[in-house]
Image 1 (cartoon, helix red, strand yellow):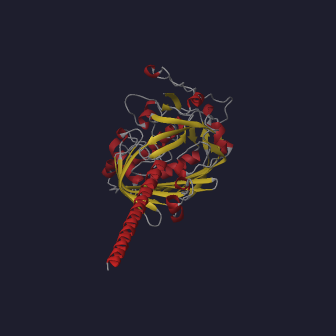
Image 2 (cartoon, rainbow, N blue to C red):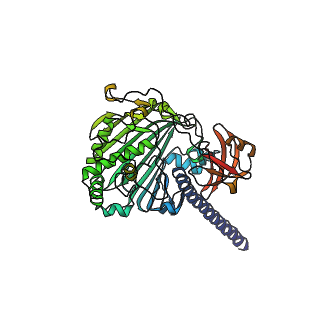
Image 3 (cartoon, rainbow, N blue to C red):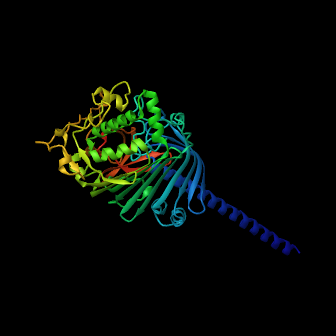
Length: 479
């Protein structure tokens, strides 16, 4: 009897250990599952919004691949003074096989290298953001999806959500999606900004990869080339509301607002060295007057390289562009002209583009007789051009682009400053504070010299980010 009781005790002890082991294994599995889901969320947001401060709540895995979260807040690199935006929901979709291999494969590097395709969807966004979500979305209003949304109005250049609401459009929250699809040497980035009842824009960019870094490595070498771009705009009532609102505010007719809008857009293009040909201008006028749809497709042959083409002039680049502009179902060659850039003046008091046009004397009512386009001697080259009889005469000699002023390190930071990008190779293994044009100051670790520049590591709350330091925007660095 005693031996039987002792046997039962051993069996009971063994069963308890089995149960505890099972509970522990299950706890580890659940913990890792949630860790992996939040890793995918954090890495995806860092990929889509580099240098942004992003917070969220309630990261959960999706059974079919990906993760979800809520209460997502985005603060742009310029800080809260550039506004913020909060989305109610976040959904990240990843092919089921890629997602589970990333989380549970024992293959080295699987966590970072397995995911090649993902879609990030942010819904029901509200806020005061006036910085663009991405560089590709910069020409479009954050809460309208419209190109050059407020241009032509006397006192505005962009509008916030509450101002769009005051136009009588009654918009609900905006939706933003960003998708990456990497297959072999091709990478496609697709973006959608939708303001239901106001407007929508879809963007597609195709790149040719010349490196082997995965999406989640977050390493940007600058070696990839842009092969094509597409912009598809759908107006849902905004254009008519804009023209009516600005006409009432500025006490002019709606036709005059369209004229002012055209003049302002042409002035913005002139600032970067571009001008529209008459056919393209007339097509865009149709959209600016009636709304509807606007589709622009551009292909680059050969593709554009950020490293190789960084210092080239537009007159060298434009012959590589073949494009088409379609408005209201009618297509036109994307004919653009390279001109001497006319940067917009800077001042202590913010000015709308149309105010600048007025001060420069180009704001007569009829843009057909008072175009803000450059004089004939400014024309350098025309791409996808109409017949020569419709173009200004060719210049006798090429115009000379203005020379940009060299960056000067502030006096209080000059001691020990490294101003030559190439000298950074002498500091590999050290931490440096890096200053770059138009970007936040960053504390980074210099890892090694790679093709394309200096590979650095930045420690962020979502994990370490390795990337090639941008040579073209580098100003100086200090230990």
